Image (cartoon, rainbow, N blue to C red; front, side, top):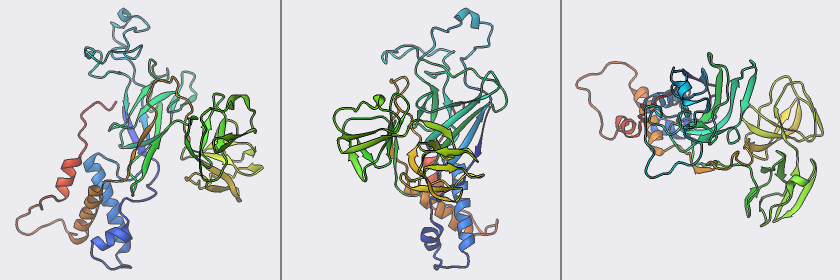
Length: 391
């Protein structure tokens, strides 16, 4: 069974209640209905999300599963006939694209029987998966290292690494938790997912990082956006704390591996890198620090600092927590696009809010009708119709 909880509110609504919705309602700036108009905008956005099957405002979710997908008919009495290794599992070795492999009952019309679909779309980030292992403890999986994320499909999909399966864990109520972000941004915004690996003549802004084969994070320290050279430096031969200069116009410093999540009341000293509740990497920006009892309000933009335990600028944001080299290196891990909310959805939110603002009674006089190319047309032409299995 699959279930989902919203674990954060949107930082920004797709329709600004003051700059966009109030003029649309033909109300003056500073109207006494300002609070009502803001509430109507949020309610209209949520109503359209339910009707469209899309997430119109970007925020964080946790999807709960009772276990990982396993091989179809794994528990059937015929399973021993197939052998313990299931040698015909789709994913071991290449499959010819033509002619297309035969689809049988076991495959259930899917190339991979281990696919897991996320219940909110469009997916913009998968922070982690937590699952209960066979020892009763909790184990974390990282996207791009332990499993594959398909950001291009709606709904987004998760699968094991090519040629592998999900780990063995406990089957029980909500023993698997998938933490991810989904939804559009209020304005046009580039959507970039790429591994943190060195590439020739790569554009690297200050405070961006790459991860070497030793899992050490190398931060680009020169101001502005710089370009790497044509030959990869020997990052792996350098110790933590070392610097490398002359990589094109880039200069690098080795800050060691990420040590894990932020923990309250913990004594730290440089160099230390953690990941925050938003799954952004944060670099300790002071020599020593004892963390506060409650988590800071984390900066989310690269190069911006956060305070901790009343220490100003204690942490420096390095951007999203990205994996290093793909493991194994035969999967798609880079995605680039635009996740600004489509304009017709903004119009739909404003139209629905206007309807609620001017029609506050659940009754109508005369014959009811609809306006062509109105709200219903926007919903019907963009609704996500997916009848595939969700669990």
